Amino acid sequence: MDVIDFSLLVLFVPTFFFVSVTPGLCMTLALTMGMTLGVRRTLWMMAGELTGVALVAVTAVLGIAALMLKYPGAFQVFKYCGGAYLAWLGLQMWRARGHMAIATSKEGAAAPPTRGALAAQGFITAVANPKGWAFFIALLPPFISDSRPLAPQLTLLVAIILLLESLCLLIYAGGGRTLSRLLARGDNLRLINRIAGSLMMGVGIWLAFG
Image (cartoon, rainbow, N blue to C red; front, top):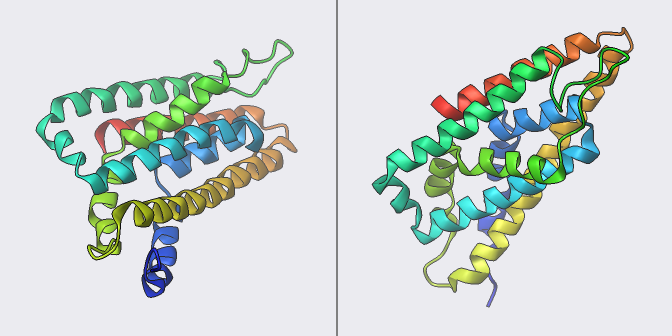
């Protein structure tokens, strides 16, 4: 027996690709890090973000997301803390300081963020995004059939989601890197920092209050 109906996959792939490629918290974060850190280092943020997306998708289908509704206060605190941290990073970048700012002087910028820090930023952004939870709760279950085993269906669908999400993150990170190079030709490194910092602050505010 097939894991999932092929006609559902034909509808599932473009639906989730469109949702993934639409600008949002994680895509804006990828764009910002692509500008300041490059695509290669942004891969660590992507790893954390994809882990968070997989966790949200699985728990939403299994019904664990209902617990989030019972304890909204704890979820809000998590959102505020994550948003405040990202906004603080954005402020430091806007001021051309901190570990994500591009060096604009001979003194240079501080040491780049660690791989663990990048992965944590991606994970927190994915898990603390309430719109992500709402999206998976609303759209993922309809593609799962009650007449077939749950585990194989969920495994396949989550794998497709992560593949599509990875592609979209790479598109945004690559776009950010290209924009950074174009601006750098005119010696506008401070402008790059301020654009990236503004985007990062936007992500933090969006995460906390969105």
